[in-house]
Length: 231
Image (cartoon, rainbow, N blue to C red; front, side, top):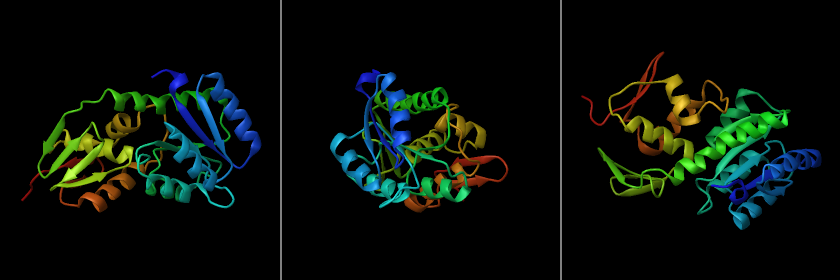
């Protein structure tokens, strides 16, 4: 996909951030929309259907955590890429962000060139989805529909946030195989974005809550595996 075809929604209550980051993204050819708070972000996301939302956490009227959760609930925006952009680096903020469906996390201040590099890494995932295998893959009680980006369990269709879907698809691609934590981070999150050490744990917990605990196994000190049937 060409840069000129990619729509990015930048949300921050600081005018300087909107101006500086927006300027650098426009120079890369992206189509940029801006919002000053979570309420404006939701309305803009509905109207423009961006490919990526860069969402500040600490904002007036509605913060980024609540806005992300509401955006994820909007039909057609379940799988939009969302990365939080914030000066806060506490684990609580990161975990809260991942809990509501954030794909990644960028801490400011950040140099423009580094930010552009991270955003390009994120946007590669849009192309990865576009060229993904459209066949439905049957695994145990599950169907992985890569074309619609949904999971079907016993006839019930569930739309998962992008990172949860990719993590599930990776583990289920080789039932019984133990995927090491470093390999999971590399294959699901890639090398372009730095995420916290508990990121995988949070996403596994969300998958267990939504899909059930029977198919996921934790291998302490190593990683995770997906099982179809285990005595």
